[in-house]
Image (cartoon, rainbow, N blue to C red; front, side, top):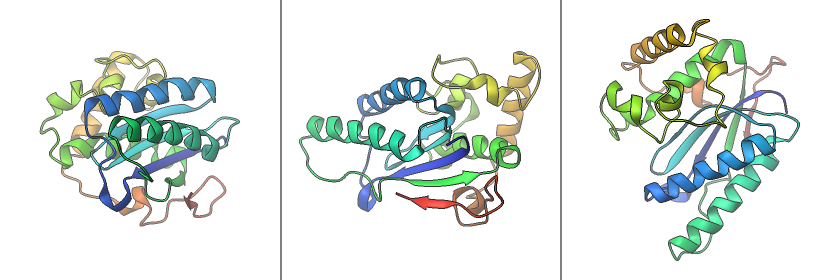
Length: 201
């Protein structure tokens, strides 16, 4: 509790965890419910087809408890909706504890550019209004009361207008970057205590 977590969830054997916008909206509903209730700060997130990234700052509740409630509820509804049974996620989830001051900006950019890198959308203009990543909320185009956009913008400027401009310029500058192992667990991401923290639940 009380640290920055880069959380990754993946479908078992590359199974799609989102097959429609209805699925995505239900997962968003879960975040809307659990973030305020459990004292979680959500700074960034994105939904792909067979995996998702979420950047959380935990409160008093453990990440394990938060994710158990979030994912269990989602699987029950997903399985019922799609007339399936059994596991949906690979290893529940993967969590990396990150040093906030060093990695927050890079992680937010990396997470938000995933849909462009995957070809789900193709331009920054599309990303600005894309509902299934938190970039659109930071840019003020989609309202997400449970997402802490002010905290992220605070890393880019004192006024909202200037911060959004600097933030978008920073994200755009990362378009040419590929996969970064240090942001997904392949490199050394240091915890606040100075040690490597990579957890699989």
